Amino acid sequence: MTVDRLGRPLRDLRISVTDRCNFRCVYCMPKSVFGAEYRFLDRKELLTFEEIERVARAAVALGVEKLRLTGGEPLVRKDVERLIALLAPLGAELTLTTNASLLAAKAQALADAGLHRITVSLDSLDDATFRMMNDVDFSVSRVLEGIEAASAAGLPVKVNAVVKRGLNDDGIVAMARYFREKRHTLRFIEYMDVGATNGWRLDDVVPAREIVERIAAVLPLEPAEANYRGEVAQRWRYADGSGEIGVIASVTQPFCGDCTRARISAEGRLYTCLFGLRGHDLRARIRGGASDEELQDALSAIWGKRTDRYSELRSEATVNLPKVEMSYIGG
Ligand SMILES: C[S@@+](CC[C@H](N)C(=O)[O-])C[C@H]1O[C@@H](n2cnc3c(N)ncnc32)[C@H](O)[C@@H]1O
Ligand code: SF4
Image (tube, rainbow, N blue to C red):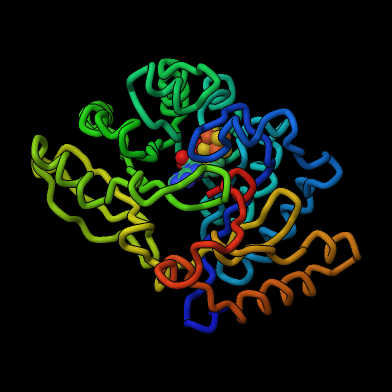
């Protein structure tokens, strides 16, 4: 088993397959910054599906049990189902995070290729609020259609909602009610200070505790045990047995001590922390002719040196450090 300097094993790999997105969520790729002048990676800079499979295979050999495809928007990468078919035989749990804009058309192909489950990001059921948040006038109903299509294709669906105070926090309870009824687990994510472009302020964060209190006031909740070490969401069960919600308190209750995640950018840089600055260039190794064994050794050496615990240190002098963008590294 590969462990880092703080004894944390490598269990999850998040793979960004593109830095492009068809949304401009205000907390992630705000239009004011990522306008026409934003330079996306060229196609030849992206890892190919075969290169991604090599990295994933090396990671699985070192103990990774869960692979998550992300982006940018992973479904805008052409033929992403072909990548899923390449990764499925590795035996790890295979999942994908999407804004669901293209999901209604793609769900069956993703399931057929071997995807196990899917996470859909949806921040509000109120159409005007959601259109304001994605900033490309995309409707709630089309995301809900995508969720239905994924369910119909047999994919278990979780829904993620980022909460920003004054923007969508008034819809927390409506979201909880709706997805409780639909029996999809809903997870609320504290708005994080990832990247440098979203103008993050602590005042914009609705603490997870407050989210739970607001829901519990109308739909009684009780705490549930974590499913496994390193689970990022704290689980809460509805007292009447009608399902559960999760809260991801990365700002108010950081969980670095249990963090087992590595991330790879679309151009093949390995990050051992969401707040890592430069990452490690795996693409140069791959395109320089590294064997599978050398690739595995490189991953193992990088993880073995890991000491990151940014979120726990953020109260110290880290606030003004340059940060990698969420749309680049994939959350
Ligand atoms: C970067 S997106 C990539 C995948 C896909 N485009 C999507 O939105 O699901 C992955 C997740 O990160 C979340 N996210 C982006 N910026 C965030 C921020 N500043 N704080 C918390 N979560 C954020 C999104 O809501 C989404 O659930
Ligand atoms: S959160 Fe996802 S959908 Fe929204 S801009 Fe970022 S990458 Fe795109």
